[in-house]
Amino acid sequence: MKDVIDLDYDIFFESDFRCRVINKTFARFNAFLPSKPGPNDCVLAFAIENIIVLDQIYRKVGKPKVWLWNPISSMTRKNKKLFLSYVRRKKIEVWTFDENDVELYGFLYHDQIHSSSLIKSTVSVYNRAFFSGVDKGRLCTVKGIKKELDEISIDSVVHIVRDKGNNGYTLSDLDVTTDVYLSFDEYLEQVEQSDILIDVAQNNQRGVTLRVVEAFFQNKKLITTNPYVASMDGYCPENIYIYGEERHRALKEFIETPTHVVKDSIKRQYTLKHLLEKMFGGF
Image (cartoon, rainbow, N blue to C red):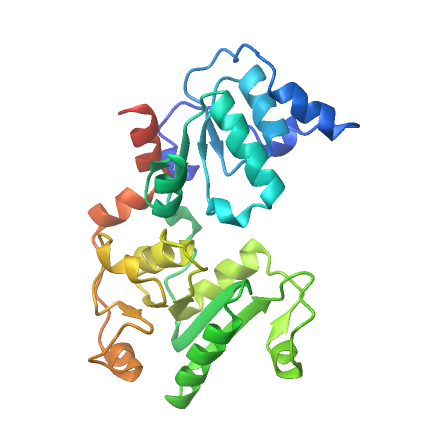
C-alpha cells in the first residue's frame, strides 16, 4: 500500500471479516439472498475468493470490485462454481491478469501488479538463477531448465513444493522437491540474491506470473516458458529468454548478453495505483 500513500483510503484485512461459521452451507446460501450493499462506492477486494468473506464486505463496507491474483483455474471446482455464481448474482466486477479468464468468464483485464516497496536491495549474486512454486505439473520443465543451467555453470536454486495427494514422485523427484513453503520474506530474499528468475507457466495460462513483473522492476534476467511475455510492454530479448521457443540463440548467449534497464514509465503500469486508476477512474 506504500505505492498509494498519497491517496485517502482505509485498509481492512480478510481476517477482520472472518467469523466463526458453524454452518458454512447456510452462510453460503445466505450470501446469495438479496441484500443492500454498504455505504462506500470505491471498494477493492484484493485476492479474496471466499464468498462468505466477500458477502460480509458487500454488506458492511460496500459493493466491491475483485482483483484475482491467481488464474481462476487455481480454485477448487467447488469454490470456482460458488465464486462465479456469487459475483454474477451480485453483479460484481472481477479483474484479472489472465486473458483466458477474460475470454471465458467476461472478467476485466489488467496486467499483473507488483510493488517497488518490496525491493529491499539491488545486490544480486552474479549468475544465480531462482525458481519457487508448487509443482502443478511443472517439475519436469524446471528440472530441464536447471540441467541446462548446470551445463553452462550457472548456479540455480529451485524450491518446488510437492502437489498434495500426488503419490507418483520418484526418488529423484523427492530429492529436488519439498513439502515446506517459503515464507514471503524468505522468497523475497531469494529473489534479491538472484540475477536470473525462472518462470514456468501452468497449463493454459496466458496471464503472466509475479515473477515476470519482478524481473521488470528489478532489471533481472528472466527465463520463462510463457510466450505471451513477448507481447508485453517491457519485453526485450536482452532480458527475457522464452524457453522452448528460442531457435536462434542458446541459453548461454542470452545470459552473457548485458541486461537492458526497463523504463519507469513502463513499470508504472504494473502497479497497484495504476490498477486503481483503471478500476475507479483518475485520482
